[in-house]
Length: 497
View 1: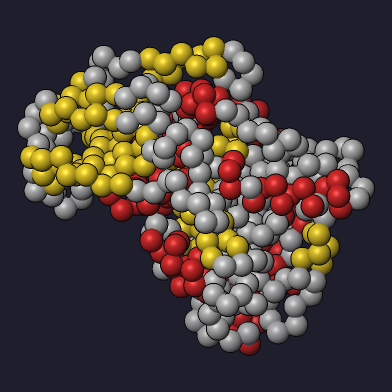
View 2: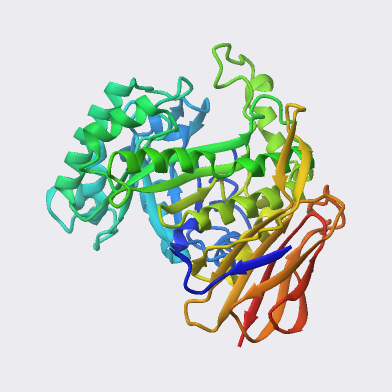
């Protein structure tokens, strides 16, 4: 398969925020995850140093917090100051101790040198409550909330640039769900108040690939918005925890760009494609497992709705299928980097995250190594890639129907300093290798970094490491150089002077 990507044919420069992460107050993401004062790994502020080290290694650029469904009944004022007020989390039906709040989130981002992205309560909250939060974070000393921050020990403003109005308020599962008309008006009034507090902030609002919803939102609020937020989980298993097979995961890769195309089309039709970018700010292959909580028939006992969430901790579920899908989605984001400026893998830690904590350390799941490959070895400028003789795979999707998908997913990038080219190549085939003929404008030595495991079902667990990054030197580059891709593999090929 011949691969062409010319230096003059560029899509654009990708924003590093495409590699963003997400944390919600669900199960063990916060407590027992990144924040665990009782752990022997934790620093003086209660953060697990092994988690911080792992996140630094994948250069996390931005974290979205505190939700997610949690945020639609979250009142931020309960989670700041010396006297924290516990509350009952009506989304996930547990007590929230409020020990991790705004101050701790900002400290986490400072420790990671990443941007904070705060999602506000547009369910039970108000426009005023949202704007009060901006006051607390961003005003120097004007008003009672800036003075409250100072009283809480933070003299300097947090300068939070990125804010989202609401989570999934279009869905019946969300507390405080809204109609299309209600949502457009609420976003407009909330955005107005928030930008009156700090005109420098960048605002997003919950959207989806529904024409009526988005038109109502943008007609009312486009003048205030910098982003439009979309979410997607492809493998819908929140009630079963029975994921698609490897072949089913590969079938999902044929649909990584569907939502982006639809939202791009709407923004273009409304003349907003140069004003508003897409934030794909919650995504993963697998839905989180939380049975009997987002249904009309709620679980009554904790055995029905709470304890089963430990099933998210089964590391055998996170295989090369997750890695292949994740790499294909990151490639899709790169191919659309002219309009997609942020994405947030949901979540970073525990649940379906790329990092899993346990009492004695961490398990780095297959998806972690995909982020490591992309954040450490990919370039910043995206070339348009052509492969005229791409082979097709015939696979069965999770519904048992046959679909066609490209055997190899490709993305070619340039390093910003001009020192070379990096090619991301994902061979989706479970059993067959693939051979690429690279016809690129590049020169230098060729190095391959790849993950593939021993089989499609390989995974990492406590005391078990089957997936990691391998490296091989491939010699000097010449046009037409042939590269063999292993089955079920994710590879970044760097050609550098």
